[in-house]
Image (cartoon, rainbow, N blue to C red):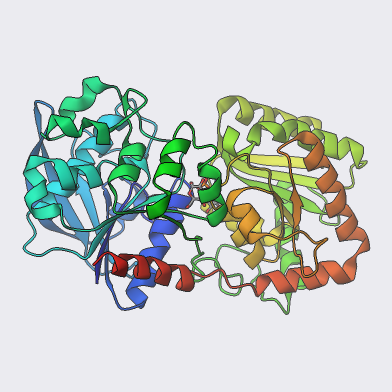
Length: 473
Ligand code: ADP
Ligand code: GLC
């Protein structure tokens, strides 16, 4: 099969969160299963671009409304990532350092999608499937099927759309309609939701199959999906939950070059201790106390706004018998509060406000517990990395967290689960963590080595996607 993944992120080329991890790993595992796998993404100006060799494979002209634009497609020469990587360059729109966060993101991703369709339209052959990820690529299924310029050639190519996060939908007003290449106006219903053009809704309507990144999230979306719940209910017949995996080559405490001491499930105590001492040294914490860490985007979905109070309450209520470390960036207000607290709770709490891939690895390895109080969590990869590094996940009972973490109160349970995204539930769970760390050595030891052996690698899920593509041929 020839599989084309189209996405805004792909690790290590450009990553803002879990979408990048998935698009950097799933295609590699599909290639290992014997398929031709290609990733197509915007050519941002990231380090990866300058450190690799490229060849020009295509150039074209298209229109964004009445403005014409030139685009170029380049291919990474040596296949370093284990799949074919193509970058689409559009000067003035995609030639930026960051992935998102610009005022013209709508125009940037619209032009990207038009360029991708135009390029595929020029191919001599048809790929087996086009697999799009999240709203930045959500108009591609519509464009392939209904835009006059593309539909003759592209309409019969199967499309799969994966919802990594339904909170972000890419809405735009109808004044942007002229950006979309010409189509029959009676098809406008396929673009619309709640009086706007909604790329996520359009993808759910037009893609041949829709997937979400965990089973529980698929169920939850029918109840609450930032306004799209009825659509998810309506399209449930073509929707599937396929749990994300992790790239066990990148996330492996045996070989990880970003941590100070490598270890496996046999040497977990010693290995984690060395990494913890390094973290404690860097952040002025006490390595003898249990360390609870948080890594992630500081946004409402992750319940990051609760962290300042939950951390201070936990330190007071548990008499300073616990340490906290936060790595994240996002909402400036939450960033400020988490940063200012450092002085007040010096020796008990510290944070790094920003993005650091390297530090994230050290935190997964050196922490005792990883806190994820998410309000919404489609899958969550952090808890899977935590499991692999022998760090006990403390998670809210939601989405992919519910599907991957069982509570230590259950027979064979290996995590700490709580029901509410609230300061009380977090503080109570911190108490359970401290008790486990100080008083239940046997259980703690068993949990750590057991969870490191759990197989969350991509092999199984990559095959589930292949089976889905096969059903469309
Ligand atoms: P989401 O995609 O919603 O942000 P996931 O749990 O799927 O959540 O994935 C988050 C990914 O981003 C993980 O690889 C995590 O380690 C990484 N990450 C998030 N914030 C940071 C940060 N500030 N620095 C480094 N890595 C981060
Ligand atoms: C999204 C979700 C996260 C998921 C990731 C990869 O960003 O918020 O839960 O793990 O995509 O699918």
